[in-house]
Image (cartoon, rainbow, N blue to C red; front, side, top):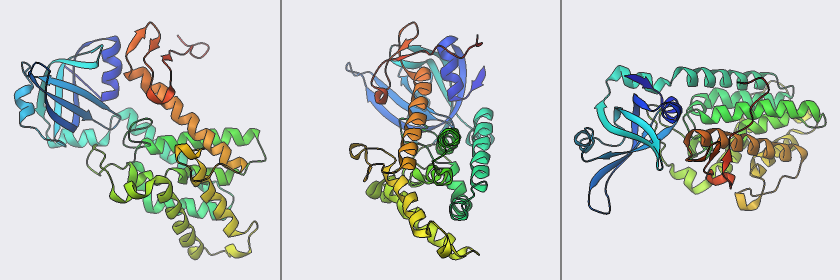
Length: 341
């Protein structure tokens, strides 16, 4: 029986239903009953690239094993996988505990995800090294030095976009690529400032949407709940700016525009990146760089929602799937690039 990642399983079960196995961690486990009193377990399984929710019914092979399992246990779930009106379904699902070597492999991530996130992180590092303003370069490199490991295991969000271990790295790297393309057209934009803003705009999610070193269940953080990722980001950026200034061999006080003005522009990008007060920004975008960053952020998040929606949403008609909540409309399959089969 072929063992697939959760992402691969979603794709395969949609076009080729069949018997597959998946190795994952139990993120949530709840004992429930149907309206007629029939017991079942609802289990959320998670790996490096995503999550799935399955039901283990009383008359299936996995029910007895589910009774002995807890959240954060590691399991192999195997059965006949397909999509029905309620989403992904595992018929006659069996559950088995994973051995240590299998757990290590799941934590490392599937090959495609590992390769993509390594490439994205290398791109972020290279983009920071290329910054010409020594202040933005220093504060970005200090960020990666001190928080690189935490950054690599953070999600871009809890639910809507890049909601997976390492998703924040993917989001930031793609935003940097988009930023460079926009700056090549709008030459009046300060590319160094926006690149630094992209790195820092969601850095508070390293607490708000962070995964443990050895797990895929995203916990809630007391401080992040009280402050939110924007406030956290401002605090972190100010702290690292001061540290980088103190460690610098050059005199930031003599640079123009002034160091304090450069710092405030960076802080403004963090504060305004949600774009509107009702979406959580304390201030509105008031500079070209802030407006550009807001829209780059929104574009990448929304396009990721389409990509995830094509894998997960219910099919309503050929080429049409049920809407993703934040997109406000049913999603339709794209035309595709010229030359694609």
